[in-house]
Amino acid sequence: MAGAQAVIARNNKDCCRAGVGRINKLPPDVVERILQCLPLRDAVRTSILSSQWRYKWAALPQLILDEQHFLQSKKLYSKPPGLAIFEYSNIINNILLRHDGPIHKFVLHIPEWFPRNQDISHWIYFVSGKFVQEFTLCNGDMKYRKLPSWMFSCVGFNHLTHLTLIDWILPSLSSGYRGFPYLISLKFQLHMVNVTTGEAKKIGILVSKCPLLESLDLRINEEESHLTIHAPKLQNLVVSGRLSSICLEETEGIKALTLQSRLNPKGDLMAEFLSHSPLVEKLVLGSDFLRCCTGKVGLTLEQPNLPSKLRELKSLVLDGTLLQGQSFISFMIGLFQMAPKLQKLEIIACTFVQVPSSVTFEEDCQFNHLKSAKIIGGLGTDSSARVMLQLIKTVLLSSPVLEVMIIEATIPAAEKLNIAMELLRYRRASTNAEIIFKN
Image 1 (cartoon, rainbow, N blue to C red):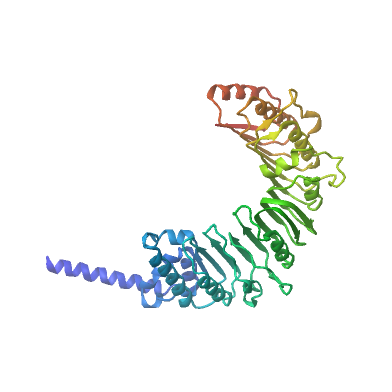
Image 2: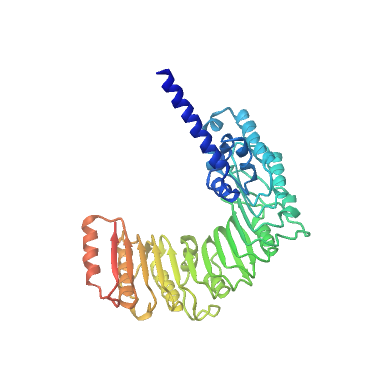
């Protein structure tokens, strides 16, 4: 019996040696791809496979130390605060000091309980010397935490192409600030409300010094601040939060525009944006922005600053709640009239107040290229249902190439049956149009 166990043990040992031998012979590019597919914690653990694997992880061109990475270490979060701070700092220091080679992508989440701003500054400085191209820094603390001012004049960040800053306050940008010459994507999210640190002005300066910027995603909450965006190469713009006003300069190349900001409803907001983005292909309007636009007047073709046609607009998403019925109807008709090539329409959670007794769309709308329509919500009240059903009827009647219409609503079964019967009576311009009703 003992002899048999010895034979089995020896065979297992031989198999292990053979397995280690095989993985040691893998081509370097295959090893790198394997390590890049693993979470960083698991990539570091491959160092126990053999002496040849001990430091392979240390040459990884990307280090992802996001919130998920630290949540997997339950022991860290369960320790006393002082010890957790010490161990968190040790983890980052050990990874960075052992790393050998360039770091093209770096992601770091700073927990809310970590107070050592000097350590954070040291880590940023270390990474700046590693030819970093994609840099993401997330602040888990909802209190003010400012980025070091030298970061925006550091030559080491000249290679940046993607920059993401979540809940950080920007330093004052001096007149000598030269920007990031190769930056193509900037995401700046500041969720704190009633910010009075002048972030809108600083972002305007930052953006104006990034000549190749193509994608900009902003969230700022400064109700009294004005934001100017000067970006000749910009193609994708997302703006959310609260601001007094936004001005676009030399942004005629924008192809995807998402507006979710609550702005001061002075003047004609829609004309301001569309006149500076006439080539937009995808337009998403959130509820805060829609209320600003439709609270006063509807959108009409007679407004002088609007382009006569949004000839490239192919996708339109309207996401609104508690909208003025008549104003929003006029607003929608104006958008539909300006978008002759519209292919995809999505209307989400629109609830209307002050709806006129008679609602009509047919004479004003024609969807010659519309292939897909989606209505989510908006059937919960009699007034809203009246508007949405009339819109659905118009879309079906005026869309000769429509392929699918999806309707999603949370309503009682009996009411759902009544609406379904109503939909079946509507005429369809497209014989291939399919209606999908989801509850």
